[in-house]
Length: 366
Image 1 (cartoon, rainbow, N blue to C red):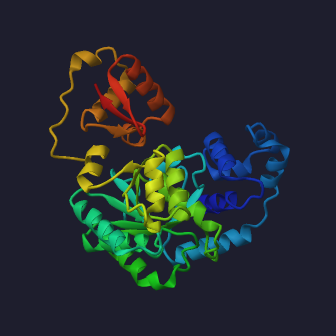
Image 2: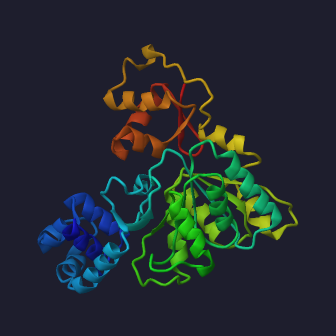
């Protein structure tokens, strides 16, 4: 395992090798170790790699720095999560810029069946506080994992509310796990871990909370969730970036409306007006839209409609039969099929009139 981690960490530090190239290499060679042991000719054959990137991999020599990071990981019992690990957040794999390696402290299941991000302004109002607390309280019986960014304002309110109502909550950081930013949230972070939540980052130790790290952090928040809920935000800021990223990943985005004269709600109102977020007014609406109402009667499958389905399509039909609608990411995770096999299955089932595609990449049985 230590040898695997050595090469996984090294892969994240090779000059010229970005996230997309790293993912292509892993898909081709299977392991990080195999990438470093491949010949320049073998590496150069991978689309987009070429001689320069192949030589950068072959000449990588900063293994002393990698060993130091492994010592830090072992000392603080941090869980590294590589692209191919089963505990890696599988929803992120459907994002083109998925992190090659993540670092995790905590016990929450990052592949829980229901994950939402609750985000918003750092300078929240009483309205934002009320909405956040009400939302989390009314989700308390739904078994939802609450994700946010451990920032001031709505983020912290969401984490605190999750702790209060006994829901696991994960904070995604824009820096290494050797520090907590803002420092005022150190005790909150400890409580999150203690209650079965956790802290997640793609940044190694000694990575400072520099401004340019946070948009990168926001893509993880958007990509690892089923839906992003924007409680309160202005027209600019991290929450708007996260909402835009979630849209690019075909995630469901919801926003609470506010007064047209309130600058703290201007971002939410804009997202709703421009059809980049669905207007949210109550928690039951969210539960219904996500197909999470367990009180609904299971959909009765009409077997005669499925006689012409192949093995992959039958798996998809079985999953869809348990809920009113299911997101494409959940179909990928629950079916155990590759994303290309799931895409082919849903396309054929649409053409046969067995399923219907809904907004936000959700599917339902006809």
